[in-house]
Amino acid sequence: MSLKELWTHIIEQLMTELPRPQVLTWFKNTIILEKTENALRIGLPLPYFLNWHEAHLAAKTLAIAKKADPSIQSLHYEVDISLNEKHPGVLDLIKHFPSGQGRKLPKANRTKSKEGVISNILNQKYTLEDFVTSPENRLAHAACQNVSMYPGRNYNPLFIYGGVGLGKTHLLQGTGNAIIKNNPDAFVVYTTTEDFTNEVIKAMRSKNMEYIRKKYRRVDALIIDDIQFIANKDRTEEEFFHTFNALYEGGKQIIISSDRPPHELKLLSDRLVSRFESGMTIDVKIPDFEARLAILMEECRQSQVFINQEVLEFIAINIASSIRALKGVLKKVIASYELEHVAPTVSSVMKMLKPIQQKEVKMVGYAEAPEIPQEAVTIDRLIDTVSDYFSIEREQVEGSSRARESLVPRQVIMYLANTKLRMSLSKIGNALGKRNHTTVMHSVSRIKKQIQNDRQLLRDVNAIVREVGLR
Image: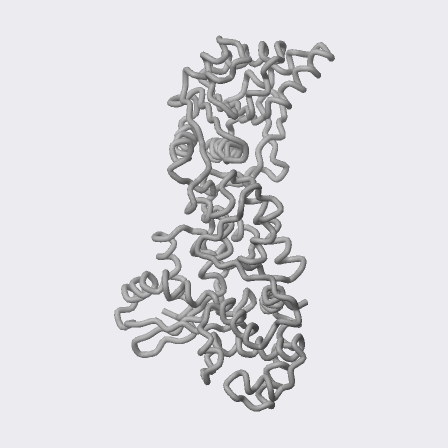
C-alpha cells in the first residue's frame, strides 16, 4: 500500500483504541514522510506535537504499523511546519472518519405532526454520540440511549436533574435527535417550561386551548426543560398535569429536567411530584478532570483550532463548576487565538482566569512566571522562554542540530532578539553557539517572511512576545 494508505489504516485503527477527539487533535496534518527498509519517518506539523507523540502515542502507533507491515521496527518523528490542510499528503480526518451521527435533522430544525402542528425544536449540534461521559453522568447517558431506542417503554418518565451548566439540555436534545434518527416519522417536541407557559397564556387569551392539547398530547415524545419554573403557575401546571397523564397512558415518552430532584420541588402539587417519581430519576454532576479535558478537546476539534494540551489541562483543572463555564473560558481563549493571532499559553490563560475566579487559580504542576518589565528582558530569558514554549532543551537550541524541532525555535529567537531586543546580528550569533552574522541574518529574514503566510507561526511568535514580557 502507499504511504498515505498506510497512514490512513494506522489512524483508522487508533480510532478504535483512543477517544476520537484525541486522534483528531494529535493526528491532524500529520503524514508519513518516508518508509525506509525497517522504519517510518513521520511528519508532525508543530514542535509541541513531538513530545506528546513520543510520550503517549508512539508505542500504539508502532504496534499498529507492525501489524500492517511486519518489516516496520521503529518510528522516527520530524517536525515540518509546512504541513497543513493544503498539503497533498495530509488526510482530512473529519472527512475520512465521520462521527457517525447518522441522518441530520432538517436544516430549519423543524418537525411536523400528522395533524399539521409544526414545532421548532431541536438543536442539531446536540447528539448523544458527542456527549462526553464520565462516572458522574454515565448512568444518565445510558438511560437516554435506552429511551432513544425504546421510547415509552423502559424509563417513562425519565427525570434528569442537576445544577446549572452540567449538560442536561445536551442530554435532552441529544435524546430527541436520536429518537428522530431511529424513527424519522416520530413527532418529538422539545420545549422549556417558560415557552410552555407562554403558549398556555397565549392560548387562554385567544380562547384556543385546543391548540395546546393538539400539539402536546399527540406527540410521540415530549421533552420539557427546567420544570421547576412551573411552580406557582396554577393554570400552566394544571394543563401540564393533564398533558402528562394523556401521554403516559398512551405509552408516549416523557423526558423532564430540573435543577433538583422531584421531592425537593416543594411548590409543585403532590400529584405531579408523585408522577415524576414513578419513572427513572437520575442526577448529573460536574464531570471529572479527564472528562472535562475531553470536552475541551472536542470543542477544539469542532472549532478546527489546535491548542496546546498543557493549556487545555490547565483550564480543566481550574474550571470545575460547570460545563457551561468550561466552554465559556475556552471560547475566550479561541477568540484570542483567532482574532489577536496569539497562541494561548498557561500564563496567558491564568491571567484571563484571575478576574473571573472567586478562588485562587490552581497552579498544579505549573510555575507562574513573574512579571518582568521590558527593559529587564535579556537574550538568556528569551532563549529560556522559547525553549519552554516549544518543549525542547536549551542545549538543543544552542547546539548544532539542523532538525526542524531545534531549527525553528532557534530562528524565532534570532528574529525576536533582532526585532524586539534590537541586538546586533553578531551578538545574537555569539549567544546562540557562536554562529556567524550571515546565519543570523538569514534566520531573521526567513521568520519575517514565514509569519506573513503561516498563521500558526505568527500566533506562536506573538504568544512568545507576550510571554517573555515584550510588547
